[in-house]
Image (cartoon, rainbow, N blue to C red; front, side, top):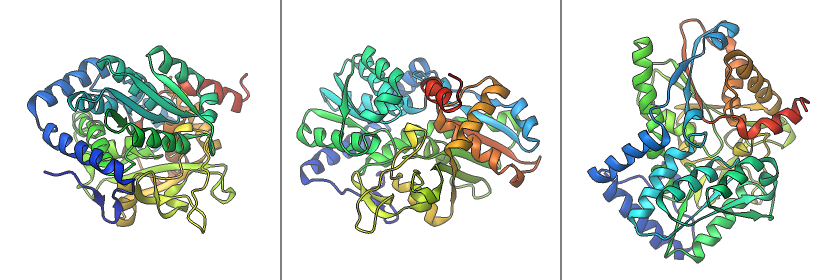
Length: 392
């Protein structure tokens, strides 16, 4: 079965002609290997013994009691090797790059988790690795910069534009166009030109497949709602994908409300964006009246992106997924709440999903069964959160 190039009108390939052969090569390679028994066996082995899968589905006894509403479970992607869901995707893509004979890999990163995951996978396979990262993100994610360097990656600062994820991706694409014959570009989310959104979704769907089985074992029934944060949107698509056909299950994606949607300082591409092209695909993006991409804002570097994956745009238009947003302040409050009630310090990205649940707890009853994707752990965000909370 071929992988989709578009989701309704969204997706596609809006890239220089020099990159089209590389995208065709990638599509053909993935379609031939995705069901190959040796490839699947190697990937499954690495997910188990390197990544640490399956990750637990954890019942939050104290958080559920304190909110006085639904039974709340966390899908513990924070327990993956390198600290986030990103490794599910990079292991698959590096295995693909190795099979394709590529001798160098590159990636972009915002919060640094995709960069660390790519660097770890590249070290595992013995392939040289370069990571593009905005100077602003380097400043607020110093720990992950050190981790990437320890893993042998070259970290390339990006000083253009807002000096964040959007600009890092711009420079990574320029590198790829120049070195396309020997270089594999490891895109970190369900974004970019086809076939990347579909490949990343499939590699991340291990999250939802595990959760589907685990919740039935724990509760004897399926959940009533799934909640995940959305920047580019890979952790959310990974959780949602195996549940999409069950219309009885509500799906909610939570974007970065930043300092408030009316301030212009946010990352709510679906709530406040328009159709446009960013990084090779058509989707909802934050842009001005002339089609120029606007600067996004979030306390979370991983949600500080002015676009969203094309499948999310399609699911929004179809009404299958509800998209909402929470502010920086609300995310910080949830960051503290989960830490104090469950002894789990979440990534600021994941705290947005918790914050949505807290903010809208009146929508839920004791009959509701909720799974929140805890997409990453908060080690990388401790100092930034401490400054914001005036703990230092």
